Image (cartoon, rainbow, N blue to C red; front, side):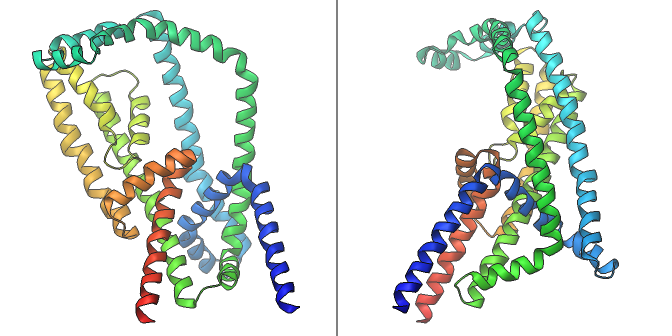
Length: 348
């Protein structure tokens, strides 16, 4: 009878847990980033808590204020500038000031015979039509987007709600995070050493992936944007943001932006600009990725580079932008779980 009651309670527990996860699903991104930011800024919160003599509410409030001032406000300013640069670039393309067909054709004409023959074999020699069709396609896109202003407004409203939930939850995670962690540890049906290993790896992966990945992205985007500004390329901030975003992908990165620009310079007889950009991209921008990423990400997560790459790409594919955190996190928990299992079977 007691066994039957235990099974019934377990069924109730699983059902209620799944139902609770289901109602939280629309805000999983806000919850995820609240946890991530709380883990990253936990050391700062602990220092403030110590200096404020244990006043947890005040320390958490000051920490959230620092996060808003250091992270959210600069992001909002950069996002506003990006929208302005993208609008100006769109206007130049629409007016025909930028001859995209001519740009592509110059690259095709500068290719060696073997490369041109290879493109012809795969029916890729009509790439120049891209530049001719892009302005009209952009106009059509604008006509499609215009009636969706209400939808865009709703999405913005949803984003603001998510941001508010994230900050609200972040405050309580910073204030009560230690107690919440202890409660979760008690509820997890594992041995103390196993729980310690899992929770320790979780914090390491979050800090390394987010802090390391974002620092590498900012560094590469900044360096690439400065190079584009020095070479007189239009909208350097926009290209810097694109390079920073692509830098979140290990082993791919900013080269998807600066390399085609360097090839265009070489095809346009701007040899020194193209050669300088290639050298700068390989020796400076690429060096940041090759040196900082393993140090900030691979070292703390103790994951091989290929695991970091595959889990990041897979996470982004499944979860969107949030996947660059979720993917390596799942991979790290997967590896440590199997290490624990392997150790337990060996000792037994």
